[in-house]
Image 1 (cartoon, rainbow, N blue to C red):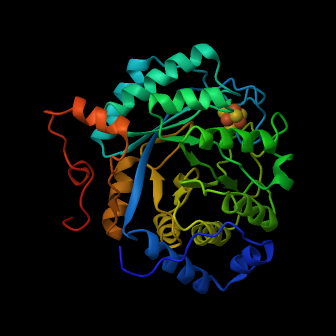
Image 2 (image 1 turned 180 degrees about the vertical axis):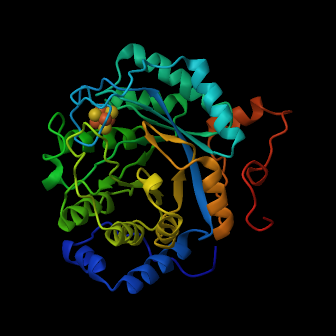
Length: 353
Ligand code: SF4
């Protein structure tokens, strides 16, 4: 990271300011995003996570983009909650291919008591491998959030999806406030927040502005901000959606980077449909996190070796996981004596490849 002085992160963005960022000439916006990015991050590092669907399909919610909703006929095969050992084995395999964070997703409105017993054990098991953990399980009560935090969960993902104004066109089975409450419960339990949205669902630019204002004006910015490009899945109501113009998607990433300078901005769902040049532009705009592996919950994600090739071409290295909490230190102690390859051995080092 260079020695430029950092401007403090703001939490008082006005709509006119965010609109003005979106309206900048493209080069000026990219320059501003890069300038901010370099104040807070190494521009040649990207954080790499792996995502596993631990319970797939039959979700009672009606999110219009989601093939896992039981309201849409998408041909998705239902899979009940995985066994704990199978999840930990998958995490080990992800670690062996270079992932430092393991995200587990379950298609629930919210977890039940019996589910909590299993998912907390999954968190403990994955932590014991020395990985960061993330889960997305639907809405959480304060007690459930605390249980997960006590088990060692680092991040909880709960997306806002879109602006408060457009939200009702996408989901009717839970409210925007429900989402904000879950995020608050996660914060109160001391976990990090992963929250972002989806672009290309038919929303207007002002909805993209509105989404980023909700995230960017939180008292603490989400540590991780996934910006997803809608993946159109046959059978969902958004199947025939026009999508968003690619430069508008890049602009959304750049504005997110400027508004939330300390957050990891994740280039998330939809990456399979982006060519290398588009992904590179997203990195230039300040995206510095990706999912790595061949499935993103239930839609395709670029195969891992394609990611390695792209990283090599761009001189990007995977960001290493800095173990900084008591759970990870405990797991490190438990693993003592096992030779742990450096991340650069697992993935590759751009400097020598
Ligand atoms: S996005 Fe989540 S809550 Fe919504 S239908 Fe899909 S799995 Fe259920």
